Amino acid sequence: MRQYSAKYPTDLPAWIKLKQHAKVIASQSVATWFSRDRERFARCSIKAGDLLIDYSRQRVKPATLKLLTQLARQAEVASARSAMFEGKVINTTEGRAVLHAALRAGARDRFSVDGESVSTEVRRVRREMLQFVDAVIAGDEVGATGERFTDVVNIGIGGSDLGIVMATQALRHVSQGLRVHAVSNVDGTQLVDVMKTVDPVRTLFVVCSKTFTTLETMTNANAARDWVAQTLGEAAVRQHFAAASTNHAAMDAFDIDPSRRFGFWDWVGGRYSLWSAVGLSIALTVGRSAFEALLAGGRQMDQHFLKAPLPDNAPVMMALLGIWNNNFLAAQSQAILPYDNRLDRFPAYLQQLQMESSGKRVRHDGKLARCDTGAVIWGEAGNNAQHSFYQLLHQGTRAIPVDFLLPARSSGASQPQQDLATANCLAQADALMQGYAQSDAIKELTAKGLSAADAKRLAPHKVHEGNRPSTVIVFPALTPRTLGQLIALY
Ligand code: F6P
Image (cartoon, rainbow, N blue to C red; front, side, top):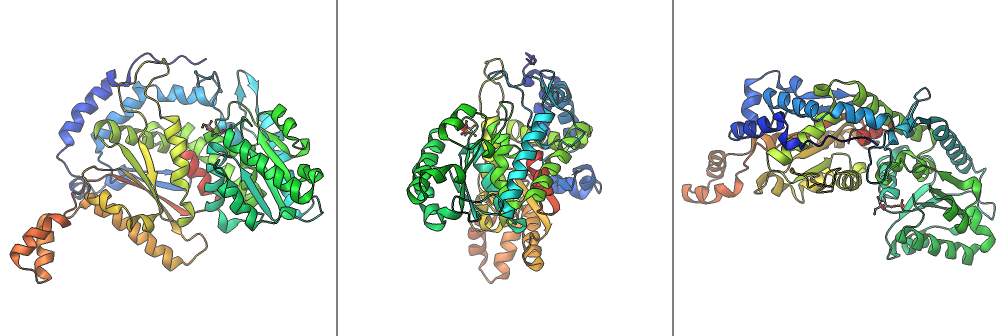
C-alpha cells in the first residue's frame, strides 16, 4: 500500500508563493507578455510524441512556470508516478494498483503488481482477443446460420461504453471491420433502435462490464439475449454473444462461450479500460493493426510521461495548468473543443475520465481537501460549439479555460474544409486572448454609419474582455496513433 504524504498541498511553500504570484499577475495581460517576449511560444510549448501542446495563451509567465514546477516537486509527483508504474497499491480505498499503462505496453516492457508479473497474461489475452477479431472480420467466426457478422453491438455503460463510442467515432475513417452500435442506457430505447437497423443473423453482441453486475448493462444484455433467442432460437445465443469482464462466474451464468470471453484485472479502472478487452468492439470495428497503433500511441505518451523532465512533461504541465486555473485563477470548469468532428465524443469520454478520477472532496486519508479538486469538464466539436456557446466563452462573466484539439490534416474529408476549421480554431484562441476593446467596438460601429450616441450605447455589448486562457493541442492528423497519444495525455 502506498503511503501518501500527510501534507496538504496548500501548505507547500510553492502553493503559498503561487497565491501571492496570482495576485501580482491579476492585472497583467497575456497579449502584452506575447508582445514583449519573442520566445514565448518556444517557452510555452511542448512536443510530446506527435502532439504539440501550445499553452502560450495560458495566464502563465516564466515565474509562474517555475513555481508550478516547484509545486510538482514539493508534492512528490515523480514518486507518485513511479508508484503507479511500479504497480503499487495507489488506489488505497479499494486496495488496488492502477496499471492501465501495462495494457498498452510494448513487447519488451515489464509490469508487475505486488511483485508478480502481469505482462505475460496481458499479452495472452490481447493475443486471443485479436485472433478472435481477425477471425470475425475474415468471416471465419460466423453467426448461428453461417452468415458473416456485419454489425457489433457493444452493451456496456460508463467506462465500458464511453471509450468505445468515442474511439470508434474518432476512427471511423480507418474502419475496416464491423459496423458498430452502442447500447448503454437502461431505458431500452437504444436497444430498440439498434434492433430495427441490424439483422440478428449477422449481429454480434459484446457484453462489456468489468463487474458483469451493472444494472443497465445486464438489463440490456438480457433483453438482447431474449431477442436473439426469439429470432434465431436459444441454441444461437452462444454464437451471437462475446464478453469482456473480470467476473468469470457471471459470464458462466450468462452462458458466454469460453472462447468468446476476454478477461481483464481489478487493476484496470473502468474509465481507463478501453486499452483492455473492453476495447473488443473497437478492434472489431477498426481492425487489428489500427487497434495496435492506438495502444502504441498510448505507450508513446507513457514513455514521454516517464522520461521528460517535469517542465517539459506534457501530462504534468497540463495537470499543473488545471490546478493553476482552478485554484488560483478561480476557473471552475474546463472546455474541450476538438476541431475534427470525429472527436465529438472526446469531451464526454474525458468527463468520466477526469470527473470520476478527481471528483471527490476528501483526500486519500479521508480528510477534507483544502483546495479545489476536479474541474467541470465539458465541450463539443469546434464550429458547432462556435455557433452554440462561444458567446459565453468570450463574453460571459467567468473565464473558462479551453483546450482546443486541432489536427493539421483532414481525417479523410476535404483539406480545404479542414483548413477552414484550422483558421477558425486559431482565430478563436487568439480572440479569447486578445479580446475586443470598447474603443475598437465604437470605431467599428461608427464606421458602419451609426451615430456617436448609438455607437457608445451598443459598444459594451461587443466587448470581449480577453485574457482568457487556452491551450492548443496540434497534431498531424487524427489517426489511431495520435488518438492513443491524446487519450494517454489526459
Ligand atoms: O458508475 C460507476 C461505474 O463503476 C464506472 O466506474 C464504470 O465504468 C461503470 O460503472 C460500469 O461498470 P461495469 O464495467 O462494471 O459495468
